[in-house]
Image (tube, rainbow, N blue to C red; front, side, top):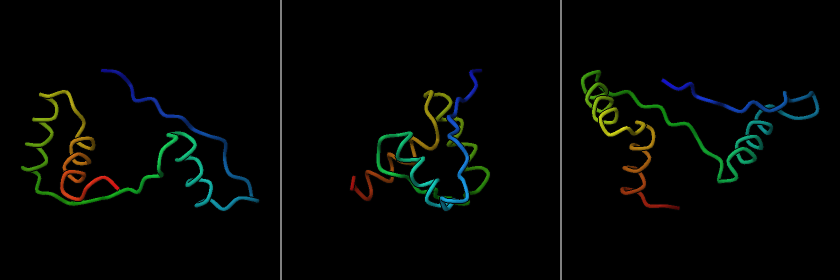
Length: 76
């Protein structure tokens, strides 16, 4: 299993608000539109089913959920 690699930028100083630092860090790292986290609760059986199917396809749950949301609500 490969380890997930993340990039950690420099810590914010007293001159920069933490929220602003996070906002700027996200867009700087991805070069894309900033993202927002969406948390939902699903039944354990549904989560297990989604996880098994994603593992069988070699995809990530987050990527598949994003695709479903884009299909439903369109790409802004």
